[in-house]
Image 1 (cartoon, rainbow, N blue to C red):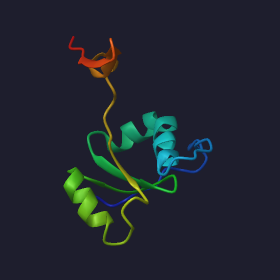
Image 2: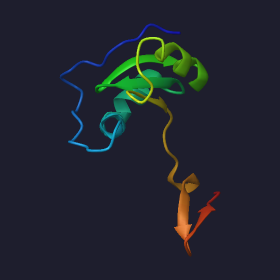
Image 3: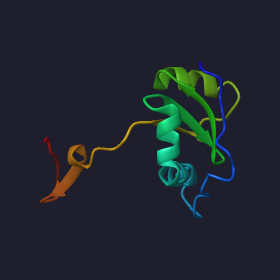
Image 4: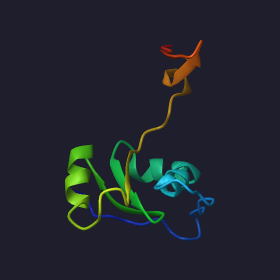
Length: 101
């Protein structure tokens, strides 16, 4: 595990209010995606309370390390890679279809 680092507060954009559990963390990731991609590209990051708790090589490693100190469901694990819109599932005739370029 690499040492956890935090992003400078003056560069971080706070997430809007969210009512779903952990949705706030996901929105925070989306708003700060460019900064996070530069710092944690390809890593699995653990996000809680709009902070990166740590980054790991695998999702399993992130899960096992994080549940030692935090309750499951109080954080998210996100794979820090750019999203390719062409590979996202799309709704066509009420069925999910995978689009490949």
